Amino acid sequence: MSQKTSVIVFDLGNVLLPFDYEEVIRKFEHVERGLGKTFADYYKSNYEVHRKFERGEYTTEEFTEIMLDVLHHKIDKDKFYEIYSKIFTVNERLVATLPVLKKKYQLVLMSNTNAIHEKYGWKDYGFLRHFDRLVLSHEVGAVKPEPEIYKTVEAYTRVNPQEHFYVDDIFEYIQAARQLGWNAVQFVDNEKLFDEFRNRGIVFEEHRQD
Image (cartoon, rainbow, N blue to C red; front, top):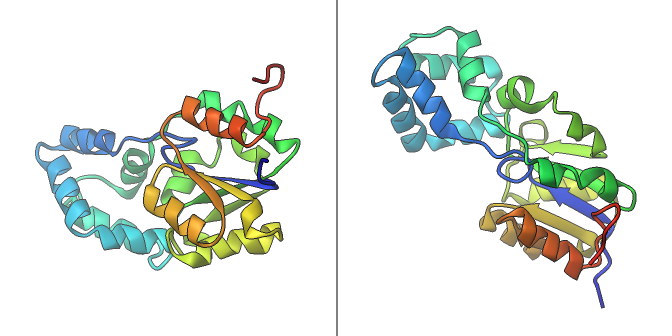
């Protein structure tokens, strides 16, 4: 018997919106040779700076100043916002299921993201209107896999943990959800996710059901 699902929670990056940080590095290299490597090396060895920004511990201004220092002020802040944020494409096939899912389930977006990516990268995508709530790390002060961000979702949905079905590309975040009692699967590709939907009796197609 299928487990009851009342809420479907989606991750954003590399699920609904594939992204490519290599594009950022390439564009910095076009500004000045070696600048992309400088950025990449700093990013990898100081990842907690990025994490703190996602957690809302840095303001946009503070994070921007750190990054412009790393880039030796070869670009201004507006150019940085553009290069840093224009990394997303849309998983159109998955996005097309949202209006169908919306008819029966609460839809929540839960993302480790930051204020720059939100404002300059993805906030204007039309598919976001299908979500009942956006739970964003920089707004709630917690990042996955910290329990607080999952609890923020539960505080909004007001249903049992077991009724949440969660999709994320990072297994660590899936494990954290399962530890809280959520039903969760790692996103690999659309077809595998659609099979998971079918196995749970989740209706995601308008005209055809297997």
